[in-house]
Image (cartoon, rainbow, N blue to C red; front, side):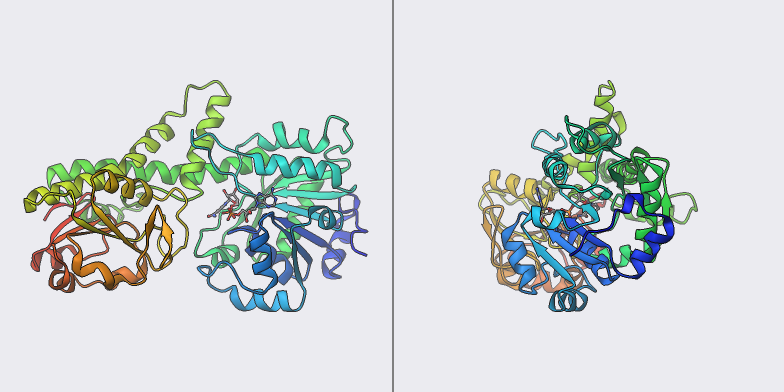
Length: 461
Ligand SMILES: NC(=O)c1ccc[n+]([C@@H]2O[C@H](COP(=O)([O-])OP(=O)(O)OC[C@H]3O[C@@H](n4cnc5c(N)ncnc54)[C@H](O)[C@@H]3O)[C@@H](O)[C@H]2O)c1
């Protein structure tokens, strides 16, 4: 029978012993991009590990030893052996598992709704279930990205409940360890990036630090409190959103002036205090855009009209799909060809290279604008073959639509696209237009073979 430990009341030595004797049991709630690798890490470190998800299809996939994150290198073999040996058990049955767990880790989604307002309902829903189910001494850790203050002002109240059945710091411990890993390299980041730990009470902070020190071979940095740890996570991502907006705005200016932004950035980054960011068709994914809106929401909660820098950056980055379309229209104008009824091949729809993920991808607004222009759209993405995406059946191979294309738009810099030879395109395509929003095609070679090339911030060549 598991769960006889009362972590919150144990001495440091008892905690270390329970880790070494493999008595601790952990439950990871939400087995997605972050949760499943997290569960694997805990199971691999010898802790009794359970995973819970509401997605029944995902749970059956995991149970049948089919690793769902094919774009995350390094996990296949470890996952298979953990499942085979019964060291990682998963279920949709919340009650059964929560009551057996000493530590509960929340890796639940925290998206924005269609008004760009953060949606924490997955955490609040699970929080209510935890209020009813947790045993004395349990430690709850939130790894999801949340606004500073969400733990202190919202989650504590939910977990304690109106009945004050559980009191934070007395009956249960609550802390955060915001996840900062990058999709496509989660294992590498888990093994290299320092982790921040904050907690409502000091004992919980010590417990989380000890346990994460055992599981992850990285520096564990204790923070003053939960809100400071969460503020760090948001600050790093809003910083990136802001910097990308800056270079996107410059890119549009430089196109007019006839300066190639890539030349500028590559030279600028030789200066020690310049951190380079590159322009692109927009900023997607479950992190950067969402995190800027979380920070804006925080500002509004505190009586600010908005957070100006984040707000303007969002506007710039969200306008980039329009700019991609402007480049396309301009190229058609140069070619003196009507864009209506033309055949456009879109290469890459993921929001990020070499990852199977289209959440908030700029590909979506670009494709919907192409539809408005009445073009015939084909899509090729090595991670989305032969399936219906954005209302279009995707191609199974790159070559299938090249010969019929009047224009190609590259949205994602997947590795596979770097092999594309401009001379090959010129010889195979029906048209000559290349809109390269990620600098995948060599511009000089494109020019030499007679392609009409447009890159963001590269102007006409
Ligand atoms: N993906 C990233 O790049 C990344 C990086 C750092 C931090 N984060 C943060 O980590 C958190 C998780 O993100 P993710 O990308 O892993 O999300 P995800 O969408 O890949 O996975 C979330 C999982 O939670 C499950 N779920 C939803 N509601 C549930 C409930 N009530 N009970 C149990 N399971 C439930 C979903 O079915 C899904 O499998 C988010 O806060 C995100 O911002 C994500």
